[in-house]
Image (cartoon, rainbow, N blue to C red; front, top):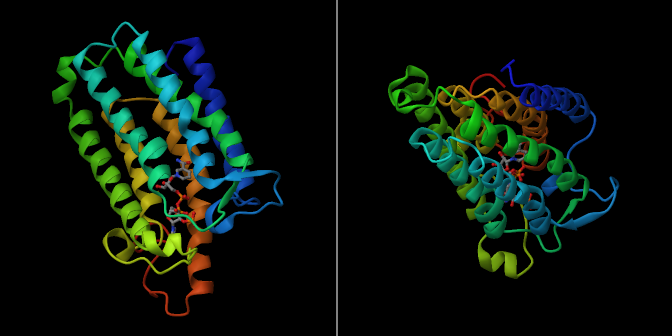
Amino acid sequence: MTGDPTYDLVLGAGLLLALVTAVSSLFVTTPYGRFASSRLGPTVPQRVGWMMMEAPALLVFPWVYLHGPRAYEPVPLFFAALWGLHYANRALFFPLTMRLRKGARMGLLVPGSGWLVVPMHAWLFATWYGRLGTHLTPAWWSDPRFLVGVPTYLVGLGLLLHSEAVLRGLRSAREVDDGDGSYKIPHGGGFAWVSSPHYLGELIAWAGIGIAAWNPGALFILTISMANLVPRAVRTHRWYHEHFPDYPAGRRALVPFVF
Ligand SMILES: NC(=O)c1ccc[n+]([C@@H]2O[C@H](COP(=O)([O-])OP(=O)(O)OC[C@H]3O[C@@H](n4cnc5c(N)ncnc54)[C@H](OP(=O)(O)O)[C@@H]3O)[C@@H](O)[C@H]2O)c1
């Protein structure tokens, strides 16, 4: 694929893992949030589980990237900063600010499987930006792939962050203190169109970064995210309809007007 045997091996293993995840997601719903279950093994507090799952991103990426020969060149630095922005949200801001139901727990299976995916993802991206992406010279600032991919990434990230903020706002800090962790119908922004706009934003963001850095590692994170998030979006949509008789009829699960 890229000519670097180690990179190609990790990427190939990652794509195989995405395929296995796609098949298993048809049968098993990842046990956290509204689908939490203790039937799939031991559980941990949900906030701790999220931070455990994403922590390798904050360790592996900087370590591998900073050991690359291109680590201090401007274009790789720009992409490393986008990585930092994404994971500052996912590994720190998101889990620290979640308004959780009292005693919310997550199956240990979730951070356990994350420890396969997250370090692989971090290694693939850091290796591409810091070492293998030899095309990421200053001429890349004006490459059409950069000019299309970066705005696509930012649109996806904006949709993701806004949708997560809408969900956070559904439970006030006071309700959470009082032990009221009920679910409500979200409105506004991407929720006007679909039930899981944060998932859609995530997929758009990874597609955008793949184009922007012409980064084969993005194929891995995009396919494994689709394997996780497409079935979960469909189940979440069904769950809303089962629990809220007045759920907006025109809203789709993940892709406006499609499904
Ligand atoms: N790349 C990947 O493979 C991957 C996989 C999973 C997640 N993610 C990303 O991680 C982020 C979080 O995902 P998630 O699956 O945890 O999202 P989620 O199930 O929608 O939950 C996000 C937060 O919002 C709360 N929430 C959701 N719906 C609510 C409602 N109707 N009323 C009140 N609160 C509500 C949840 O509370 P509860 O916890 O109490 O339900 C949780 O704190 C997303 O942006 C997603 O894209 C990525």
